[in-house]
Structures are given as C-alpha cells and as structure tokens.
Amino acid sequence: MNISEVAQAAGLPAKTIRYYEEIGLIRPLRGANGYRRFRDSDVHKLAFLARARSLGFSIEDCRRLIELYEDRGRASADVKALAESHLAQIDAKIAELRAMRHTLADLVAACAGDARPDCPILRGLAAGPA
Amino acid sequence: MNISEVAQAAGLPAKTIRYYEEIGLIRPLRGANGYRRFRDSDVHKLAFLARARSLGFSIEDCRRLIELYEDRGRASADVKALAESHLAQIDAKIAELRAMRHTLADLVAACAGDARPDCPILRGLAAGPA
DNA sequence: TATGCACCTTCCCGTCATGGGAAGGTCAAG
DNA sequence: CTTGACCTTCCCATGACGGGAAGGTGCATA
Image (tube, rainbow over all chains, first blue to last red; front, side, top):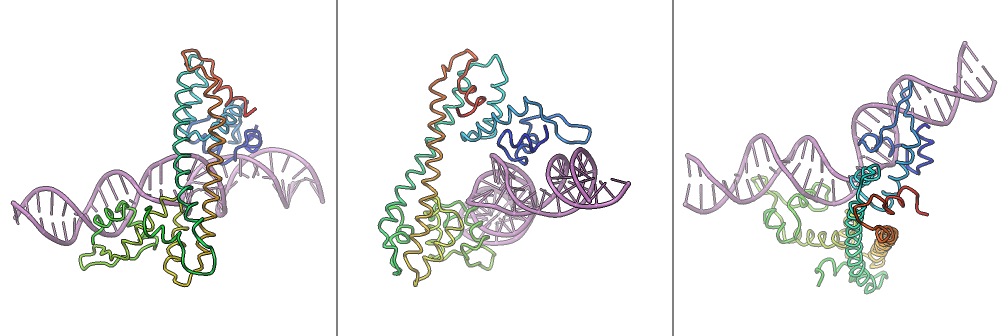
C-alpha cells in the first residue's frame, strides 16, 4: 500500500504518517522507486496510534503503548498505570477548564452587552479575580 | 521599575514580558543604559494580560481585549461577544475531554491491572471505538 | 510516443506561547 | 576593584503537526 491509501485506511493525514516514521513510531518498507510500502502490520499500528492520539495520549505515551502492545510478556498493570496517569491529567485539565469557565461565565453574565462602554468583563480583568 | 520587579508585581516571568513587548502588546520606555523602564500603566496592562491569559484567552484575543480596554468609546457588546466566543471554545474543549475521559475510564475499569498480558485497554486501542 | 496529471519524495519554514541558556553589558556593595 | 545580581540580545527547543516548493514516478490517454 502507498501512503495515501494507508492514510485513508488509518484515518491519518499522509503528513502525519511521514512524521510518525521520522520519529521512529513506524518503519515502513521502501520500494525500488523510493516510495514507502506499508504492510498490514504498519496499517494496524497506525490505526492504533490514531485511536490512542484521539484519546489524548501524547506521542511519547503512544510510543510506550506500542511497545507494550508488541510485548507479549507485558503486565496489564503497566498499561493500566499509563492509562490511569493519563486519565488523571485529563481530569486535571477538565478541572482547570471548568474553573476558567466558571469565572468567565460570571463575568459574561454581568455584562450588559450593549452599545455602552461600561463592561464588567474588562473591569474584572483589570481588577483581579476578587 | 525594572523587569524583575514588574515580573513580581504582574505575576509573569521576565521572559514572557519581553515576549509581550516583542509582539507589541506593551511598549515600555528605555533607560539610558538600555534597560526597560516600566510605567504603572505598563504594569497594569501586564496584570490585565496575566489575568486574561489565565482565563485561557489567546494572545490575539488579549490584544483585542487590551484595545477594547483602552477604547473609551467601546461597546460592551464587543467585549461580551469576544468572551462568549471564548466561552464556547472552552465548552467545546471540556466536552471533548469528557468524551475522552468517558472512553478511557471504561477501558481502565475493564483492565485487571495485574501481571498477566491480557489487556482490554490495548485491545480497545487495537480494535477501534466499537 | 508524448503528454498530462495524480501521486510520491525530501526539505524547509510556520504554528503558539513561551523556556533555556549563552555571551556580554551594568549597577551597587564591600 | 572585584563580586554577584541584575540587565540586554540572540538563538535554539518544545509538541505535533500543516503548508508549500522543487523535483521524481506511474499510469492512462491522445
């Protein structure tokens, strides 16, 4: 398979696939013409990567996940620990965003949103989170 | 005031303050020695920026907010529109993270997390979001 | 056979909002 | 006069790609 076909199959842009090769996540073969030749195993790996990325795992997490995926002697505890750590980061991010949302929503609610210049949002930003 | 004093006062790293000058968010004066000299108005602006950034506004949003802040003829509707648009982005991000969290939590819950290799997390990543 | 067009390649720059660190000038204290 | 804490500019790095140029390849059609 050539790259655009694989991109279609894995749901990743060709650019991203080249990037994943560059950083060593995949190692497709090369044809005599210099084109990348992807095996089914490459395509599976890329689909795996696409799903892991869509769950928010970093590239380095993905690298580790692929290692574990290919290690038949792995302990599921290692996978779970990685996933739980990521889950904790997601929760932290959600909490951060919810705090922002809370403050911002209060300011927005207090703002008349008309043609006059008086604005509680700007006052809030100028005066601090008091 | 010199930069480190201002950094303390505004709650921003000196590096960030230099960056904000570089991109034209602030225009501190310069002393004969080449050091930046910050007026009170610069410090206020930086504190404003720090708070806007902490609410997740992008630098370009901040630029616009500062413009509005300094425009005595502004309409609060313009500020409110900007804030509401940002609020919508925050909500979208929260929704995305919650979706991730949901999927990932299911996988984690299904994983024994012991010394055996069998792992629903890896199976889930390999098999797709079914 | 020529030609066109879609595909492939590498290479380099841009994103966003900084952080790190080098090389060198300045200032105040001892 | 030196030390050490400041300050300056400059360049490189991050994460995870995207855009686009310059040039080679493969295949169908006129």
